[in-house]
Length: 109
Ligand SMILES: [Zn+2]
Ligand SMILES: [Zn+2]
Ligand SMILES: [Zn+2]
Ligand SMILES: [Zn+2]
Image (cartoon, rainbow, N blue to C red; front, side):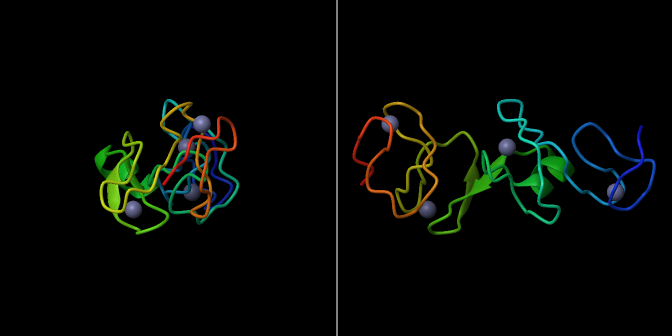
């Protein structure tokens, strides 16, 4: 175990610090993005909410449009119909104002 750069405790694991819960690498096995923002609630890459994963091993995301929480494996918001990924090519939809996929031009609403 290494020393955590945030709280300086010897509790830094591979993905997060067990002492202060700072996340260094996204623990989603399909993501693994390095986390630069120390106070982020969720991964900017895949949307995983860190607290739910660290405390309960549950993979949730929050819809950027309606803010409702749901499973990370959903491709479309169950509440407002917002696409998290393009239904055709799987491209990540990063903005709530995107009307079509920038990669394959599938209409997103
Ligand atoms: Zn720490
Ligand atoms: Zn991630
Ligand atoms: Zn939504
Ligand atoms: Zn697409």
